[in-house]
Image (cartoon, rainbow over all chains, first blue to last red; front, side):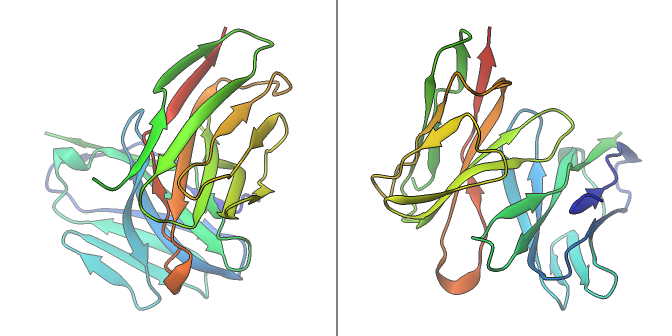
Length: 111
Length: 114
């Protein structure tokens, strides 16, 4: 089983739609969680951290479910510019702050 | 401007040659990391360093070497021993203090072995 698993997609959605991605992680000792966004042939950029209580940043909402070991990302009112690959990232505390990446979920927002 | 720079953006190398990729940051971050990304795979950690003059192997260190002589710099050498070096190489840095752990990436270097 992979340490971090994501549905690769692609998710093709119309502009204005709401789309949700899930990500599961295998190590229950994982302590820090993030969503990164990666555009084609570019570096990953931090989208948001994921906190236990859930957090929202504009159209983006991230949630953590420790019991089921998954995190989610919800994008509301999707824009063409949201088209990218979304990477789920987990850090195991005490492991030298090493990030473990999922393979990413590709989102395509269409007119 | 604060940030992480990597050079060159594109690099072509003949088989059997060593090549060094540059990574510099002016964010005053303590920790620096090297990853490689291959199509259809997540980023994989090559080496990381949390303090000057110290570094640790990541998950795929074979065929690579690093140095950390200055806080700002963490160059990666891809040696001829690396069997499949063609990939997208990404450098990242983070501040260890405060427990935030977010890593920030440079623009990457695309290495192609001919």
